[in-house]
Amino acid sequence: MTIKTRIIKNARIVAEADCCDRAWLRVENGKIAAIAPGDAPELPQANIIDANGATLLPGFIDIHAHGGGGFDVMDGEADSLAGMARFFARGGVTSFLATTWTDSSERIQRALQAVAKAREMRGAGARLLGAHLEGPYLNAEKCGAQHSAYIRRADPVEALPWLDLNVIRLLSLAPEFPQNHWLITEAVSRGLGVSVAHSNASFDQIRSARDLGLSHATHAFNAMSSLHHREPGVVGAVLSLDDINCELICDLEHVHPAAIEILWRCKGVDRLILITDSVKIAGLPDGIYQFSHQEVEKKGGSVRICADGTLAGTTLTMNAALRNLMSVTKLPVEALWRTASLNAARTIGVADRKGSIALGKDADLVLVDDKLNVRMTIVEGKIEYARDEAE
Image (cartoon, rainbow, N blue to C red; front, top):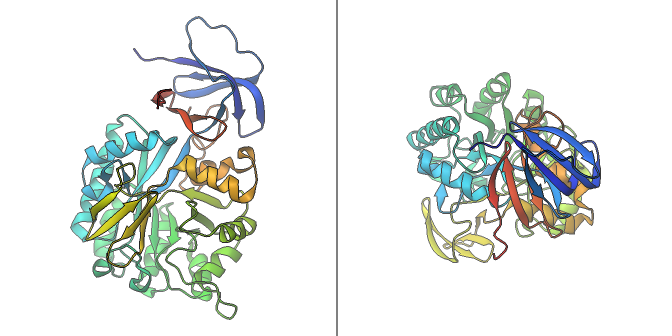
């Protein structure tokens, strides 16, 4: 039976307009219909969720996730994307972009077609909103864990059919190559976000790309030319250009806490976007795994290439990323929540319906305890994860 009306009561609600320590929220047909302080009304037909003082946040939006729970976007299977969606909901994610790896044209095409199919199927778990195309138009000098043999320049014969699938919402590339410039302007003309990624660009090259429409930086500090006082590089550009949003892998390993503090001071609450950059072995036991074209070791929360120790994505969850940002900035969740939801929604053009707790928006919600452990994840009004208290 489909439940049309839910009431969440006795919650600390972090809404877009305000934060209320004791309040209730009503969901009607998957949308937020009412938010108010105090005692919830008595509605006999409603499903009641007693938060018992827990905090209700907007559901997390992860716009950079390659996999998790044993599933990978590059599997090229709708079933794998469905498995990822179920896994992500456990960490409070209510929406995500399936992020590709640099690979052959055929494998990327297959992955994007699977995203198109899975998006229409709408299974359980987090809502798949589309794809983040990370590569293959990168710089091999900053390849990181990307497959350098497949890195290439943007070819309209290859890239235009990918855009025509209408599933890509964010596109990451190295903008220092003139052959990639047409793709920036084409993507922007279609309303897509364009991001600098795996790039060795100069400050001036980033500024020129910004003028073409580039507005985003993929995993800031990682796989990009560093800050030097005579050549600020990509890092200097994205820190100093006010109209560029910055992703952050906030696992306290990819980026030092001091650098996180600098990024926070430069970009502020409206330009910083938390991501996981999670890979298929997130949620699996520690050990050695075959990962794309190489072996990696998962040890604790770290994933590294066995051959050289290079970091290869993460096993991070969004609630842990937000918790880590709170620890670095010494700020409460009500000051930082946008970095895990609304800023991502704005970047990919869905802020009219997702990313915050506001009347009329989708009821994408996550209920967390005082340590930001996820108690419940609600996607468009439907409970997609509820923690077993024995866990």
